[in-house]
Each structure stands twice: as structure tokens, then as C-alpha cells.
Image 1 (cartoon, rainbow, N blue to C red):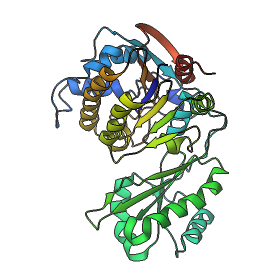
Image 2: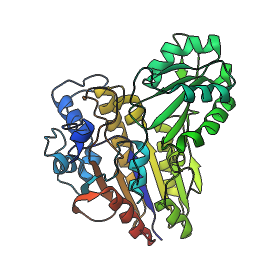
Image 3: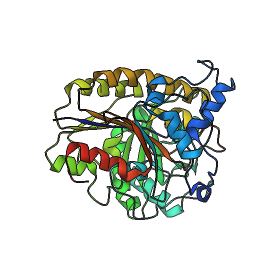
Image 4: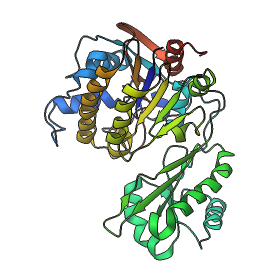
Length: 390
């Protein structure tokens, strides 16, 4: 029996979403704009010259960008040797759960609840609930923010008061940051676990625990982040694979995204490098007929949200080198699909995700253009390979 590997490069979009203007993202294109910046010498920090991702480009990366958006892709001009295309999302969101669920066959049937006000962001009764669950006299921040800056701004006050730091973004999230030692990791997780059902009831997609350590000027987020997500509203590819008797492996935050449904074994790590070690190991050890679903988050968390074009380019080049070694380890008949869940164009205004199509690169299924497809077609392709219902 052959195996399937579904690999998500978190936020590596390729532009061209037909409804991008509805999200304020008309013209956003993560991959094209990175390639153009590299070719123009605007990303020569820790790397130099045009974007070099020969493995992904040979699978069809540059061709997928051009198909999706018509944008120029300097440095990504290989004639594809794999199966390739670009996928369009149906769900009304540009967030992590929507993208992953739909890739796994379940488009989101509702609109997520967001917190559109930026400062203050949350209603008083919600913050009172958080303080009550935390056993504190109040909360801190109450704003739209990125994770590292909000900890730098409020970390010292958090240590002084013991109050949790509460913030959000344009996504449907409620995030709580607290010091692992002074506040306590278990206490933070218990707080978010207790809070999650209240927020899920109003269609807030995730309550995220964001632990950190250190002191003023030296605060550092730890790898013990935990997402408490709304469970998918219907059986996903993972559920169907497990029901059919397939072993299922989740790498990275896949377990959180799918509320551990349909997941046999979870493989976590402190970095994308750690996660790739799991993927390499499973390329040798994953069972016949198994499904491995992986998410590599640092494209998004370290470089997209921070609008770091050079860092994003470096990470793409690192991933490409690792991908080549991984593909060489696969067995005859194995299927590997490399795709993304949304965009996060580091050249775009703001710090939020961008509404984009995503590349679909397939190893182990011959050659040729797939064309424009739906996110759900990706899961259907994997299901067909494993011989399970789509």
C-alpha cells in the first residue's frame, strides 16, 4: 500500500484570488512579490540574488504563480516535471482553520466572528470573564497586535500585576499571553481551555495560549503555544482516513487546527527545523496506507506577519533544500502534495493574512497541469490516492 503526505507551507500564497478585493487584498501575491524583490536586490539580507527554490520550481511553483495571477516570477522559470496547479478557496476567510479544513474537504459553512475595533478591541464583559477565570483583578493590552511587540509592550506590567495580556488580529482569534513561570503554563492553558467554549459559541475560531519567558528587554515566546479551536463541522480527510483504518500522523499545529479529530499520532516541535525532522523520519517509518498531514508555520509567524521579505525568502530556500532530501526518501507509489492555506504577502500594508490562491504541487502522480481547482480538490486527490471516500 502506498502512502500520502499533505504538506502545508503556512501562508505561501500565489495571488489571483477572484474575491481578493472584498478583503482589501486586490493585488496581494506572496510568492510573486518575494521573487520580484529578490531579483531586484531588495532581499539581500542573509541571502543574495534571485529566489532559488529549484526543487519546488521543478514541481511547478513558478508555473502555479503565473497560472493563479499572471504575475512575473523572476528566478522561478523551470519547466515543471511534476503535477501542478493553483487552488481557490470558497470559505469566507483568510485564516488558518478555514484554509486547512477546506483542504481536508470541509469548507466553512459560516462567517467567523471577529473583533474589528483595534484599541480597545474587546467588550468589557468578555474581559471581566477572562479576569474571573484567571482569578486576577483585570487584564492587559485589549488591542490588535502582533505577538512579539505586545509582549515587549506589556510584559513588565504583566510581571508586576499578574494580569493576563489579551489581544487579537484581523483573524477570528482571542489570544492570551502570560509568563510561563510567573503566571504558570498550566494556569494559562487552563484559562484558555475554560474560555474557549464561550468564544466558540459566538464563532470565534481559536483561543490561543501564548506563553513566554524572560524579563524586560529579553522576553521570548516559548514553543508551548496551544490553540483551542472550534472543531470542524463535518468529517474531514483525517476522520475519513482514520475510519478507513489508515494510520494518521499530524505534524506541527495540525492537531490544534483539527481539535485532534482523526489524528492517531501528533508530532510537535519548537521550530520548522524540528518539524522537518519528523517529516523526514516519517518518510522512512510511516506505515503503508498512512496519511501524514504537516504544517510549517514559520513562513507565516516569523516572516509574513512581520513583513520580513528577506527572512521569508531565506525560509523558502531552506524549505526547498529540505524538500529535495525528503522527496528523495519517498517510496515508489507514495504521493506528496505541497500547498498552502492562505497568503501573507510580506510586501503588503499591515500585518495580517492576505486573500490569495495557493500553489498545488504534486510529487508521485505523473506530470502536467492540473489547472485552477478548489481547495477541497486537494483533499479529494489525497483521498483517491488512499482509496478512501472523499
